[in-house]
Length: 125
Length: 125
Image 1: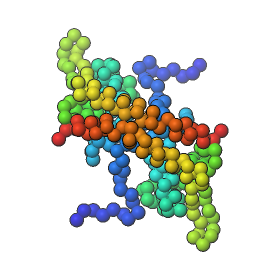
Image 2 (image 1 turned 180 degrees about the horizontal axis):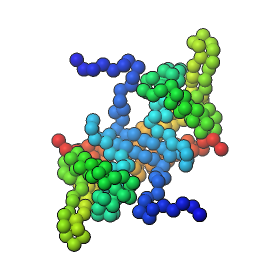
Image 3 (image 1 turned 60 degrees about the vertical axis):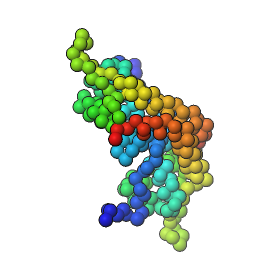
Image 4 (image 1 turned 180 degrees about the vertical axis):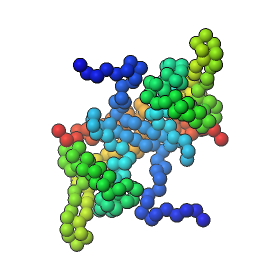
């Protein structure tokens, strides 16, 4: 039997392209932050998102703090209390930033598909 | 006075986009390998290329071995002896692979320039 993955662990990336955007001297946006934004969007929880990505809560929380400080407005809003005991969600700007990054990934994949196919054809046996 | 860089050290990347291509389950091609190919092309030496990139000779040599094993034909040819005491250069396939990677980078930058500009405009301060 093949080893089982944890149910909440995503498959290792099989993206053809991994993209990191340099936004300024100190701010970059890459797959780690994008996947964290997406996990928060899907789980509504920083802790669950960290677990899904195999990172500590502290690391996930630090990335959230950085993302919120680096942009004009917070990308992630935390919600305290309530029936679900608090949580996190993307702000409208967070939704836009995540969508822009995914769009950039798609556009880069389309733009580079032909060369990528050629490179794959040049691999050994 | 600003701190001086070593003459042979390249500036830290200011590329808007850093791209890593997944070519197979085990082979990826990213800025490290591409810059190493380019350095070998420009310096004619694995040792000098390693120094330029701030990596040990062993690390540079291991990357060269991996690149040569991963593709249909070696990307780097080593030249022993001769008036310059040996050296390294790109094979025809090495030239093509490097050119393809740089082309992919350019195409990705063009395809994503607009969204990248928008993301930069959303930064704080």
